Length: 391
Ligand SMILES: C[S@@+](CC[C@H](N)C(=O)[O-])C[C@H]1O[C@@H](n2cnc3c(N)ncnc32)[C@H](O)[C@@H]1O
Image 1 (cartoon, rainbow, N blue to C red):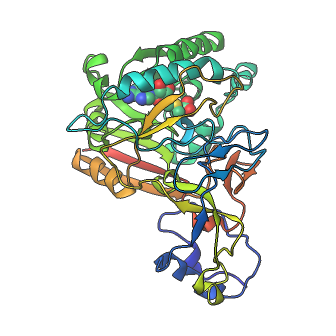
Image 2 (cartoon, rainbow, N blue to C red):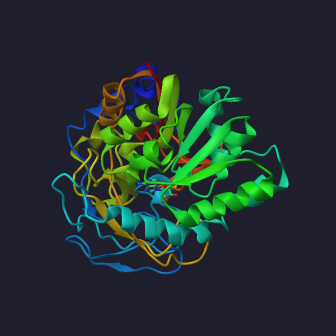
């Protein structure tokens, strides 16, 4: 039986077709969205950010000390897209709090974290492929191409460019690209990559919010920002205003990032039968893992603080494992963009993500090189693309 179209399609969605086998109750599947009863989660397994292969670990956070599943995927991560990573030791909610400044010292914490990831990532970011073929593009930029459009000849600023793999790809599409990042060590890797690839790319070290000053007030045709970026920023409205300040009139914003629903989800075990499963057999029964909304969806003043010894790329330990992240709801992102004086030109939700964000639940689509839920991928918006234009 085919699912009813109104249950499968999401507004503006670029979902792939639903490929679940027929199950009873599918005609009512869209009612699952009503969330009138939460799935009962009895046994929190672990934060599923880059759970490591090799044995189980005892977790002591939260009310239930449990054993983490062994032999999870080495390179998986959740939390904040490419940003989040590491071991399953969960330390949310312990950051110093706010009053205007969201978390004292968050820039230093995140800078040292990213500095220590840079050389680790340089081993695992597809750099060999970029160097082997001068036409090769990163898989992230390849995914973006249909929505990015032609960028040849444009002045592009790539915010939070990290080690420059996507930045190089944008340059290979003919743009004049400036990469901005907080982490000096990341920019060292990015400069080295550009040099070896023979690309002329300018890199500037700056906090995103300070980028207009660091770039001496220069304006750009396109602000590009890629997966795993805005979760490192405490205030989405300030980010949107920064984007507006970097754009020429008529200039464009392109952002693809982790969907805030994904970033609020952890893989957890369903502990009990749900009363509605007799009517809706889509509902997961007791035993298996399922995505559970356990982390904040809406922007909070306090960051999530994580200590992850391993990152999502490379194999070595990260010397500075502490990081601070914030989620931003989709409505908060859109409203921030509109209030900054940009007009929305598209908003697309995708069911796939470039990393194994929910280990044990996702499967790699080799064609697009992205992960989506193995079972019922229509449940989860995993990433989004938003494009806007400055008036
Ligand atoms: C996941 S990576 C970049 C995403 C990019 N798509 C990639 O994977 O190459 C996140 C980057 O954000 C940078 N970053 C974090 N906080 C920042 C801030 N406040 N200002 C500028 N860059 C920041 C980090 O240094 C890191 O290089």
